[in-house]
Image (cartoon, rainbow, N blue to C red; front, side, top):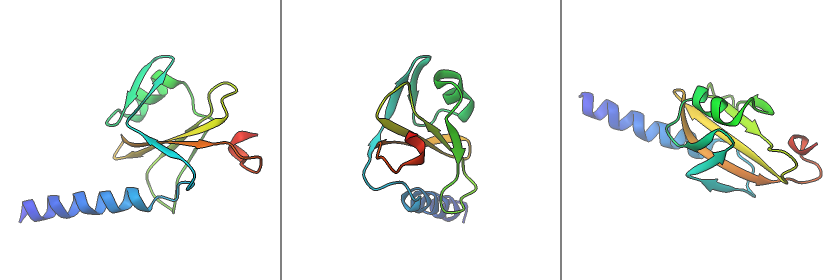
Length: 105
């Protein structure tokens, strides 16, 4: 019974991450090097902020209770979304800036 619940939770979590409303023109990464160190999937939100600094903003997608930290480093023409589930980094997503993107202003 417990095994079925765990498998169901894993499937639901995977569907949740796939359903997040990320922009469609980006790229997924397994890790990202910030000034303070290498950020990898599985890091806590506190670890990411410690290595990358304060985010440009924080948001949620599709009314999700999970955090998404949004970064734009220096004058880089990319925006980076760090998505968390249960306070663990699950997705790093890079999007090229467009003129109409409020994250690139």
